Length: 480
Ligand SMILES: [Zn+2]
Image (cartoon, rainbow, N blue to C red; front, side):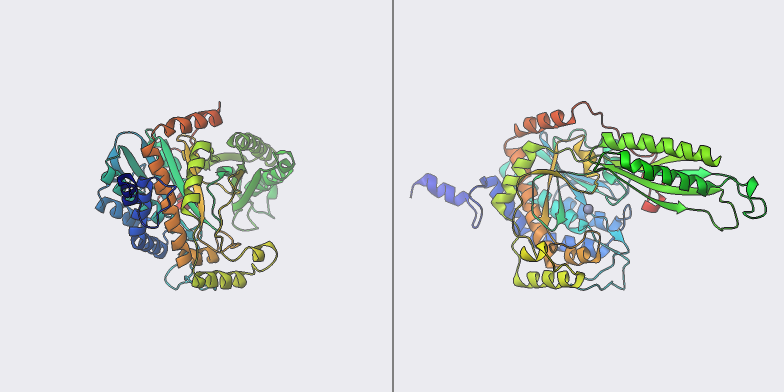
């Protein structure tokens, strides 16, 4: 045996993929060493199940874990008490790893394969953000270990991002300029499949329209009244006609949040809450302009006044091909999660209980253990990761943490996110995030390629934060 071969073997950790560099193998091993801790963080955040902007225990748990291992932690950033930035290392490149940890209301659920709300909670992790936060934290800790051990230069920064669910926490971080010196950003999302392909999302503009009229006795003196509800209804009718004349993949949804109090009073105040979504913010913004004209028309017809209040907005994710290719290669080297018989049994039972037992879903198995092709497409949802991707070259991955075919934002996703299925996926996610971060530290010249792709895709579009002025709310319901 030659001495160089012996050295090579000494640097190769047992079970590590030879396609990965020794530093990346060390990162994978560092995640494995922290698997129990990552599991525990994910489980605790799942139990806390805190809603948007109220993730006090969850954010403290993750920030404390990072601080204990030598990260410099700044808490309560960008007017959000539950946001934090944890940093280790120095100088360039600066790599951001995003973490989320907010739950959803009305989704209390035990980690069992049948619907069973917990008596202690009304919320649940129906989007798996408990795993998102835990795995991203685990990845940052593993990267720190390798940076320190191998004296690599650069900064790893974990962004604790509150209120992804409707609150656009990351947009406040961007508005505050907290990502200005970041070179590249990585994120992931729990799901039912494994892919690091280029995935965009729908841009969204969220706003409320308030109509003000004149109250009057609805039977005694209706001619003296001007109905704010008429304004709302006429506006909604106008918007429903507009649907035919928007780009095909656009979506417009609304609810009436105030339609007046009693039928015998002509409503003085009424309000509708709107979302406009489109694969491109440039298109969503054009639709928004037309909807505002419809609101003006409805006010004219009903002799009422109307005001449009911006709630929040998120851009579509700007894909980044060089970064996505790095992440895809690491995912393939590490491999998709492989589940135990008990986990497959859990997923199979859960799928039976929610009626996912027909057609395509049955031929593929209850849990996805394959890796999707490297493609580019758009998911039918919106995320504030989009805003990060317009200021920093960004890429992400999705990992199977729940049974195939379960709907997002449902009790079945909560059950999986609290089960060993979720944990198993989160460990893989941590490894892919950590190894891709090391790609940047080992070859900082990769930043230039990522930035060139970012500039090319951004083109002439000027990114603009869509938030009302002032600090972030302390509860999502206060966003108005
Ligand atoms: Zn989510």
